[in-house]
Image 1: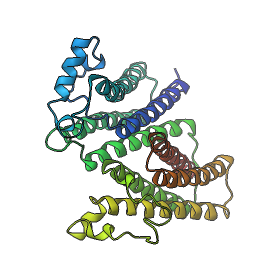
Image 2: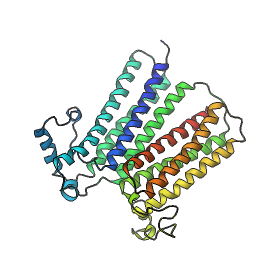
Image 3: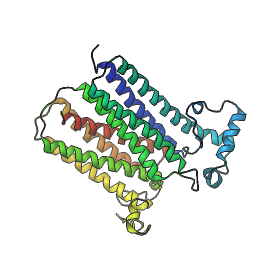
Image 4: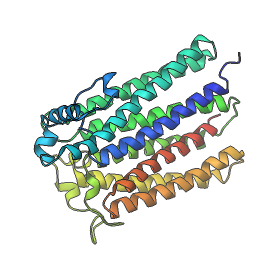
Length: 338
């Protein structure tokens, strides 16, 4: 049987799609403040939600023991609790389902010898990344069950960024199988795309910081942070020492996220401009054009999200935009790396 065949490619692309859905549900979970509704972790039995009023009441009583209920949601009824429980439950079940979708076919392809040694090594890395992502999810939740009724924005950023990177690597491995033929590419241009990808990943991290600190609900103006001020004074006086403003202060984190948005746009425009001097394949041209389109849409969504004070649907759309932008960047880099 042919190794690295179409079935392997379809499996990897299915994994990409499921991670994409997982990130959407995770975004909704965060924006609806549902992430701390399930305070225990049960790998198998946790896939089944409460099935009757007694079980629902037990789950609600457990929720009442933790800071989010005691400090923020003490007014919640059982019906309110059911609403937030659903999104966190769905997020966790999807995570388990993705694990099954990755592990079982991998074992099947491995046993039936449908994978090359090179692909096996890549897939082992991918499985490790997926397992680490699941661990980070629970590690993040734990930070909101002790004193403060919210998760650590550092752990949220680690959890979200790992999900994006796991998707990107899965997509890259699939592209390796879809496009097996290699070509000589101009190194300087490839390195420009690589640097653009690094800046984009940093921007994704800061997007998670903004989400984790609820920093999108302040300074809801554009292009200024407030009327007449490009840099609000709270950017540099909110925290002490100064550097903490840019990793822990709401204003400072939002300012960095705003500024990085301009830098990401600049790099993609530079990539587009430099590419005009190159002889490109159709795939390379399509990648560049897709990059330009997605960054314009994503920038527009970011502005709307700030100005309209982060409605759930728009916050999710902005996160989806980041996903598509990363996909376009990975595809373009891959087409200029072979």
